[in-house]
Amino acid sequence: MRLSRVKIAGAVALLGAMGVTAAAVAGGHAHFDARLSGYEEVPLTISTSGSGEFQARLSRDGSEIQWKLHYQDLEGTVQQAHIHFGARHLANGIAVFLCSNLGNGPAGTQACPAPPATITGTATAADVIGPVNQGIAAGEFGELVRAMRAGFTYANVHSTLYPSGEIRGQIGSDRDDGHHGH
Image 1 (cartoon, rainbow, N blue to C red):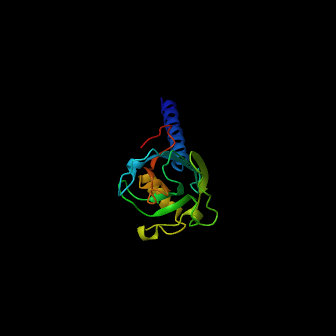
Image 2 (image 1 turned 180 degrees about the vertical axis):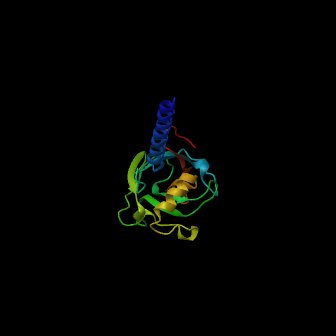
Image 3 (image 1 turned 60 degrees about the horizontal axis):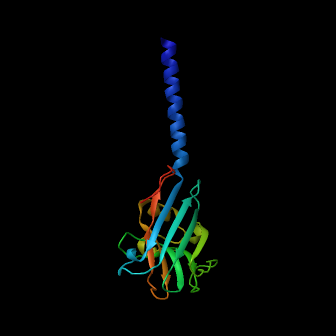
């Protein structure tokens, strides 16, 4: 009987250790996504045929975000696209440039192609520009990731017709559990 209890206790300890290890590995990963439309724009909702999708994945070590932005059918010419730090229904500051045709992005910012287009990139601490007046200093990648995980970032594509933004989508987060959504 004693041997059985020892074996059971050992098995329970092993399973517990495996669960902690699996949780630690998955803890660094997260998937993010957003569907962009004019209906999400603020302070004015925009009626536009434009739409888009943003997808991203945090690296296993938590040091970079691989992202993809697709947009189509915009009514204006694309000027720029960003990740902003802000809650749903609020217009807030830029955290990361995704693309720009205005020459206002940090060195190395890619140009925004005409729609339909899909662009990809990697965001690291060097790409985080703020917004300082909202508590995220340049380079504070961890602050950005924390905001993304909490649902307080959004992707926005700005155009000549709608310089404040033609399509927008709140970025949602899902851990590596195979499920995506908001």
